[in-house]
Amino acid sequence: MNNLLEQWGSKFASAEAHALVDGVWRLELGDDAYILKRRADRTRAWEEYDLLKWLREHAQPISLLLCTTEGIPWAEYQGSFYVLYPYLHGIPGNELDLLDQPLAMEVGSALARLHQALETYGASAEFPGFGLFQEVSSYAWPTVQGYSSMKFHDRLQGLGQAISTQLVNPYEALPRQLIHRDFHPGNLVFTDGQLGGILDFDRVRIGIRLFDLCYLSTAVLSDGFSDPKKREGWLSFVLDLIGGYGTVEPLQKTEGHVFLYIIYLIQLLFIAYHLDEGNTKLADLNLGILLWIYEQHDYLEPLIEKTVMDGSRDVVR
Image 1 (spheres, helix red, strand yellow):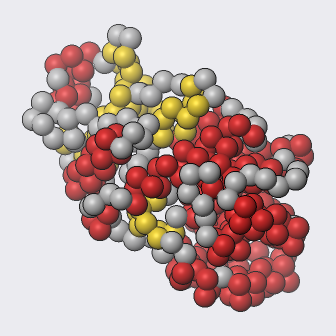
Image 2: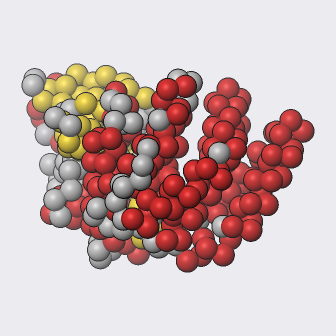
């Protein structure tokens, strides 16, 4: 690995590397720390570099890719490509209780500011599109049906009918732009109760902006689903998240109406992905989350719609 690291300068050759997950390492060099990641190709690295530079110029709390001694934001080694970031110090969101109202509001407003910056990025056309509805229709829904149709046939059939009647037409009218697409608690870094860093922009795509809000909502619920207290506090988190977003950039009425349906699509994708990996335990967890939310749909939907229409968090708990 030393031959790889020294492409960013001779000092990096002496850095201590600690594997975090597949393709990701934390480097320690004296008092400084960095994150090394493997990438699919150099084109994506350039796109990420240009986008992060733009976001930094627009006051977004991100970590820039470092350029090698050759002035490029990636290094090639043994047929693979790698990028390097300075480590953002702070407390990861998955180590905090995001159900706390101030934190939920903070994350919501920060996401809205990120979306505003992403929407004005001039090179957004360079990024591929992400069709959530199409991916669920062609891949996730058949996969989930094949796995659970016998046990949950009636409930899944009702969910499928609700999605087809309530989401199909509104979905086409939802605002689309560049989105983070991996906006979960582990990619958020906090300092003194403020969001001080947003990580991992390698999955940025053009998609419905509601995706990031709903993705974070499902991630927070998944982290606390086994705890009845946290499970019951999830609605307040969602309303606070939407309210915080609305203080910066109000959502459209249609986005409030389809909010839960976008969550259903995301959950279906999670279930299908876990099934493909052979992880039936996580597939069952996400199926349980999906059905738990759907059972409360009639209660949740009007509260979410009211918060969206108010433009900020002003709903009685």
